[in-house]
Length: 75
Image (cartoon, rainbow, N blue to C red):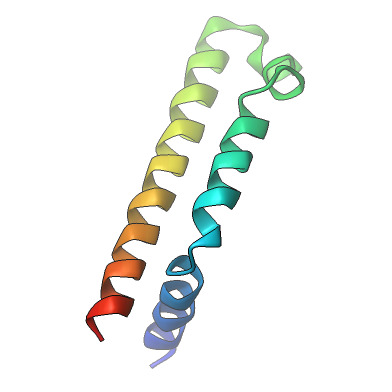
């Protein structure tokens, strides 16, 4: 019961058109110099880990936004 409520809230949030713009600017912000210049990212391993994790999170958010939009149009 609780999971269905969370899924419906997430679906309604991700089906909005503005979420694509928010994700773009979030990705732009996360790949700029202040975030890439932190001490955690001073090593090559840390930099690759950060880049792949942030990139993967943004791609997953776009996929979920597309699924939410598709399900909203279908209903």
